[in-house]
Image 1: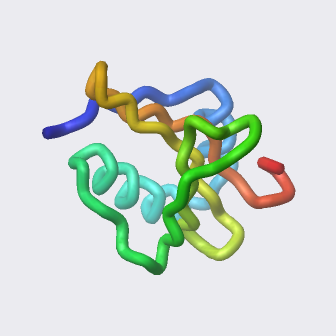
Image 2: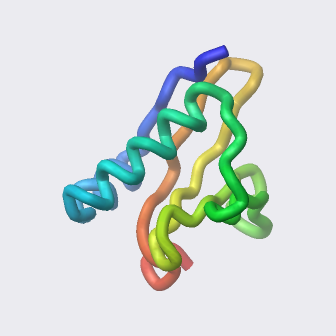
Length: 89
């Protein structure tokens, strides 16, 4: 099953700030998520708590995080935020 990708305004803004290399690495991860693939352990994919309790986070690089949520009921992958720990938390 392929998820439809939805990008929030905040994600789009953060994505534009990334270098071309970081953007390419991010797109590879997004494709895996959109195809319903499980990420390898090196991405430290995990459920978040607090304000983002309905979201997941993965580490594209040690300080480059992707916050996303998968909405099974509408087959949608929502890309919520991207940036460093300092930018996001």
